[in-house]
Image (cartoon, rainbow, N blue to C red; front, side, top):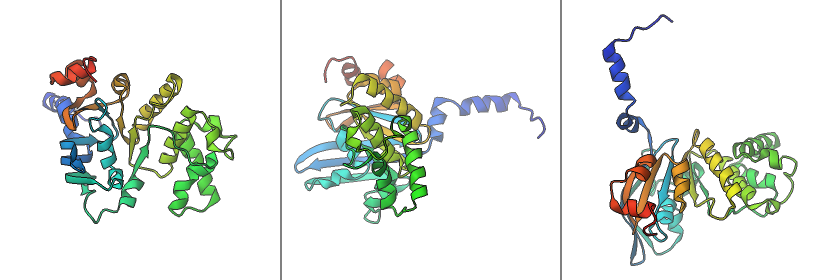
Length: 277
């Protein structure tokens, strides 16, 4: 290849193309929530939510208890529909297709969108079988392939070295932090596109929390991650963008640095400075 000359105008255009505004435009939207409202019976839990979640980023959802954070994240894989009294209006578009459309099978959605819960919830099986469970459900029976998936997933969750000699042992024998990383590995085994995390470190000690945070930082290179957290320091440390929820509404959504250093809404500032919540 020969040398390519660059004029000042071209260079200027390149600089402009790297500006934050243009970078956000260039990013691919994974989830686009449009005018979403949700009711539990007669109580409205989400009010006119408009929120875009971007590819290969960590999006943090913060706000006080009861503000709709967990409800929102559970709409993204339609888990909220397990509650009989739920009613939804508006739309949630995943990769260009409405997940609320009747033609969108919930099984297909949950194959693409993994979930990690507040408390570690390993199956009462061996470490190996916890990871192999999802691939087996999807029809993979070959032992060699399953072995590769198990090792790759445990390595991906940064727990392989700790458990590689214990794969036949019951997962309940792991520590709480190890169990949570095992659950993340179980999620990785089905090769998701998105990982949803509902307060994944709230039940963990500080050391285990740090390991999970380091893992999230690595996973965002390959996955789009949305995390609900009460820990604002955690949101500031690990997320690219942050949405502040209050009383079922999105008060503010921006780059995390902006939310924590220069929020545009006084309610956001009051919350992150500890005046309420």
